[in-house]
Image (cartoon, rainbow, N blue to C red; front, side, top):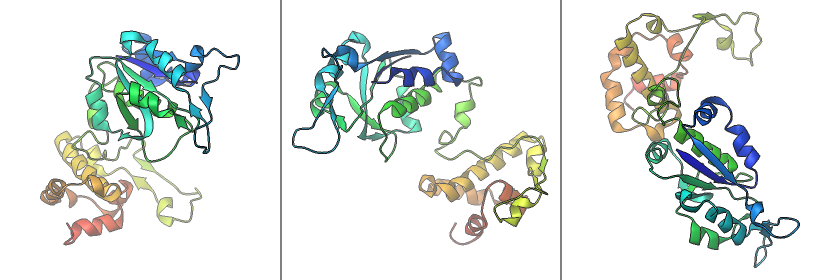
Length: 278
């Protein structure tokens, strides 16, 4: 898959993507990355790419011509042309899964300063995308987010091909269940805490995860996934999830208060699932 990034800071894009699983995919050429700097398409000694906005206002506005020429330099490899913008559709895991199937390159245009001349967006952009309801100094971080999240779904990028199917948002839109590794017990004795006495007590991995019964472990993880999503992102929980939780009460009986706590589930959530609210 080919990604093009139009940016005033190509070193920011190239340097960041050299690391991790995406960096390995670039080395294997499972992914192609091309950066284009609009400053290369300016004629003045200062390589000016911005100017003051008509009508006044704060900040500077990126010029139409350098951006358009940078885009046109890609020729038929421009593919799907995307502007990172607060005006855009909010990026999501489901969008990443869809975009990985595109049979054309993806070109990401990174704005800077106060914004981009609207005529460039009108004439040259296929889609605007936002990574969240906040403002960054430029589109580069957004471009990196898109490239990383899309690339993870390409065959061979992750070491384990089913890893992405276990991540948060992948299993029916739920958050991932808690994970544990060695040691089985962590002893907090002698460790200063922020005043929470519970955090100074020994913390043990719930015994079900040590049982070797993988069918039961998977069932418990599903229940915990729903519980944690209910606690942290209730907007993602559907009536079907709640019905599934009610039918899974048999698994919850094996959990102690300590087990719930070590899994990050609060007393308030336990009370909710035990009462009429569920």
